[in-house]
Image (cartoon, rainbow, N blue to C red):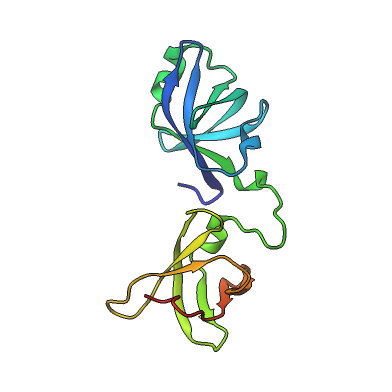
Length: 172
């Protein structure tokens, strides 16, 4: 998959007979699905642009239709297809907000200069994100770092460096 695109969801099924698809979304920005928005499908190793015609929420899914896809037959082949947004269509975030792709891969250091490891995943268990840090020591369990001001002291996306304070109970 091209690095110029970010996954926003997966078409998991069709819905009805009018070309509506059921999307399991992985974006925090539902406005990506507003009518007129452009999304991309990975189809036969190509990125195919589609324009959102309509959007509504139903249970835990987003239901979308695309311009030019008006029948169940036209969207049936799209099942299990991943939806992407172009990097150039990303929203500006506040200074203390980051996209996951910016955080994953960053090296984490304590304020003492000691290296903790590299972020390999971001989880959303509740009130705040938790960064999963792969520790380089043999046999070391992953460290779970809550993204809170008391722990995370500096995030330098440009250089891929994150500085944190040690807190009791932080490491397994």
